[in-house]
Length: 322
Image (cartoon, rainbow, N blue to C red; front, side):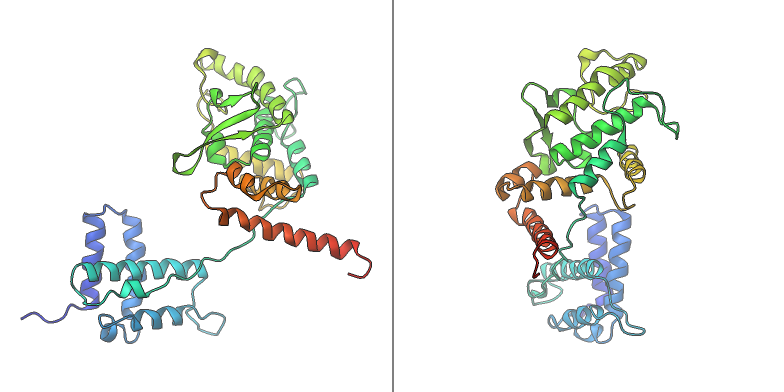
């Protein structure tokens, strides 16, 4: 009669299941092997792993300790990933009858840290937008770094839209010309989970987008021998193809550097600033949720903590007895 399955054998079986039946990528398999291998080698795991949750909770508690000499503690994100790997392993072991207790149901994942997003002030956003490029197609020649007016106007149009509509960079780059309505003053966005939403776009952003579409974008269509009637991507590169995410990211970074803003400014900083400025201006939280395309209001509520911090800062500066 075969003896009880060792933890190493059970882990091997789980990884084989992930690879063969679930089609999990090689990189993910390697990450799981590393995480579960560390769990298997911990003191007491081989003895206790199949009898209940003690081995897992003991291991995760040890790995959560940080800040001591020679301490093997993990960062919160790494600890959560490792806990998820262990819970998935136990779920498999119970489902296959390797263990008789549903240990996975007794393991709670560590809560993810709720870091406040980086945002810019209204004045900083204005500096960023101005640094991105000219507002009009005939505003001059290439910049000091050789960046063409065609590219600069595209940069300006992108930054204007990211802030005006609070879009994710992938959402903005996924737009086609027909998704933008100048008459209605909105853009049709396909967000996460293929959910569609209509987001208003202000007159200033629409004006710059109109300059980009009628001028440099039309010229790019001609170079690529594409008919303007064919629509196509709203933002396109020099060869008439959809603008790449890396290029758009670099455009925002370039504008941030020119504006003297921190290096950590990214396209997503504009989305965070959009939400924060709306709430500071009195917008309803549910409306901001809809504009951002958040599935849960709890995600949007993160910005209320940020506006609370801003209110306290203003109070501390303005009140004579603060």
